Every structure is written in structure tokens, then in C-alpha cells.
Length: 470
Image (tube, rainbow, N blue to C red):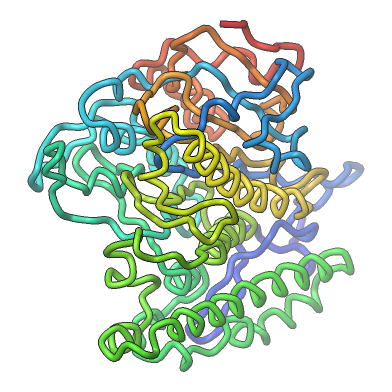
């Protein structure tokens, strides 16, 4: 059967001078029906994201009450109320390989590898393994323009933490392409946006205001496509292009806001002229900065959603902060101080309350991303249905640096292979890597063994499984 003008390839891109944009799944991408047969539905890709939070949680307010489907969200998890039916709260998983050495770097550097990092102060870093996200990227990354995308909000520090004898490089990475090669994360929303949607070196131009909107650059191509597809696809395209334009405008507004913060300081103003996110000068001592960085985080999460929606990549990681992050959270009502310092609460009631409020803020950002994904229709479901979005930390309690019973939430149905809406309580010391094996299988990258895994995580596909009380 010949291809009709209104049938287009899943790999169709909108193009313009200096711009290239992937597209959301459209009805016109469905294979045409053969004689006497219904049109086949397009296959829906599964995406995977990991959101990493440093410094652990206030364990007194993390764990839900009840288990299985009969559970109530805890105070820290309360921001997830609107997506409660789309999550699994996983209790009693741990990363045994991180139960050694320094309190922070071992937990961060080995969070996605399930291995123990090598103690070093030099350039001979070694995570002990490839991170699970990169196993997926190496196996399916050829299917998308970008194998994976790594994002964050703080630059990787490259000095030696003399208190523990580790290079801080470990604290700025959770994604490892090889045991000796961490993947750099992008902290600048503009550069991350350009990586997704620009085909030239626009990101290196000295004046970002010279960059024409990518929507304007691909507008003629978009109009041609609009004339080919049906009404439903036209609406989807408009929604998608409006979302890209909105993020692009917010990035520009944020750039100007950050520049404005430093207009009175000639040295910083000079450094900020080329705007490379929150530059090293801005992040060098984050505990000194009281500014609200919520918009920076949300821009990065929006970019992850756009990357998945446009099938630019199916694998992504995001770090809310580096290990030992001292970012100040005084912008929150009831909080006075930095995240790391407050996490060492020493059971002080005031600090524990501040710790809880910081944790709630992180879950609010996670909920923001999940709700946005759920609002995007895809096939007979939505983008979240066809994804797995893991939120977690490498330690339970920041005061004790405890890697047992890690705070973990998995959102999304993984293309239908996960039965959500439950709190699953496993036997104590169930390997975290069992979860990773299950996620890799749903990404089309099954592993017979991953680090200390003993199998895939029991029950995540069984709606009647409620876990085993520890």
C-alpha cells in the first residue's frame, strides 16, 4: 500500500534554520490499515526519569500509614495527593554497597550503580559500575536523537573534601557512562533547551537575545504539517508548540531576573553577561544564597517533560542538589538555614520541623512534574502512564547517614507494566537494585543481574500485592 500524504513517520521533525524539533505522538503516525483490516495503533515508547534529592528525609514524617491500596499519604508525601493513584511508595529497600565510608559521597555516587565508589582525592574516580539509567541509554538510545539527558541546578565541584578524603566529583553525579566516566549534568535551562531544539551553535552565542525563537524558526514547517493532518492532530500540535513557547519565554524571563540580581556588582555582572545558568560564581557558596530557586527547578523539570513528549530522549536524570549541598531554604516559611546543616538535626525539634518543610518542597516539585505529565494525552492514556519517574535519596536520615529503608517513590505505569496506587512494604534490606532490574526490563533493557540484585522487585505489576510487613 502506498503512503498517503497524511501518514507521517514517527521520526518526523520540524525544521528551520538553526532549529530542529521532535514531535509528540500524532494520529497521522499510525500505520495505515490494510485491506479489510483496522489501522494499527502506534507503539508507545516507555520513558524513565530519576529525580535525586540530597541529604535524606525526616523519617518521622515520610512513611505512609497502611499498605497496599489501603494507605494514607504522610505529611511529606501529601503534595502527591492528586497523583496518589499513579504512584508506588516503596518501603524497606536499601543500597547495601553504600553502607560504608563517607556519609554523603558514597550514597550519591553509587545511587544508580548499586556499587561502592573508590575512595580517591584525585582524577582516578571509579563508581564501581555503570548506572542503571545509562544501561538503558546504551541499549535504546539509538532510537532517539539524544540517548539521555542529565540535568541539575548546581555545578559539579572539583575540590577535595578533606574531612572525609573524597573528591567532590562523586557528589555531583548519579549518571555513569562507564565506571570511570560520570556524565556531566546541564544546569543552565537555556543550554538544555538549545540541546533539545536547536541544531546549530546558538547556545554559544555571546548574546542570548540574538537567538530567535525556535517556534518562529520552524513555523513554516509547522504550517505545512498542519495542512496535512486532521483536526485532532492540529490541536495536539498547537498544544505542544504553545508549551515549548511558554518554556522558552520563562527561560528568557529567568535569565533577565538572574542578571538583575547582580546588576549592582560589576564583577558578577561581567561574568553573567553570557549567562551560563547559575554560574560557578553564583553556586560557589550556595548556603549564602537565600533566593527562591523553585523556578529554576521547574524549568528543568519542564524540559524533561518536553524531551519525553517529543521523544527526543527516553532516559533522563535530575539532581535537586549535590551531595553535601548547602543550598539555603530560608525562602520557605518556617525555615532558616541550609539544607545540609538542617539535615544534621541532632533530634532538635525545630530543625526536624524545618527538615520536613524542605522535604515537602521537594515533593511539591515532583508532584508538579507528575501532574504535568498526566495532563498530556498520549494514545489511550497519558504521558505519565507511559513513563517511570523515580524520586529518591541515597540515605534515609541525613543526621545518621543511614542507607537503610531509603525514601523512594515510583510514579507512572511504565507502559502498563506497573500497577500503581499502592504502598508496598518489603522485608528489611530488600535490594534497591531489584527495583532497578524491574525498571530496566520495562525499558526493553532486561538484565539477568544488576549489582547486588536478587531478582526483579516482587509485586509491582500485581495490583493485589501489598508487600510484606517488615
